Image (tube, rainbow, N blue to C red; front, side, top):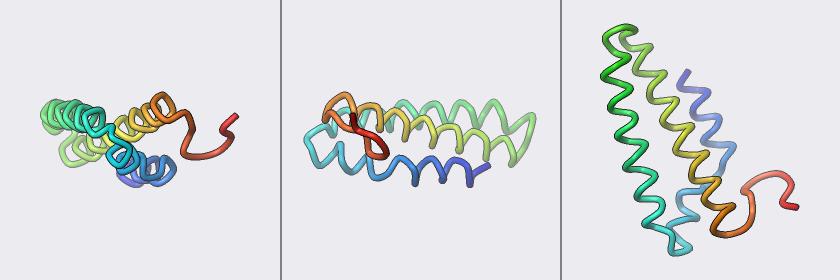
Length: 87
């Protein structure tokens, strides 16, 4: 499960660094804070039921959400996608 989260991370590219380098560090800070809180909540909820697998699911989900949110923010703020067709 963690591999899936990292695959999305690699696919999205360095969106976090790009946001920070282009003056959008407050947006990246908010993305990180919200997804970190989501990760903590999901970990607490899932670890009781599923143990270490629940932690893996929570971490993978948070990683995916962080990267997709940052990628959409790059498109919205900078006007291009980090991969694929930019038309």
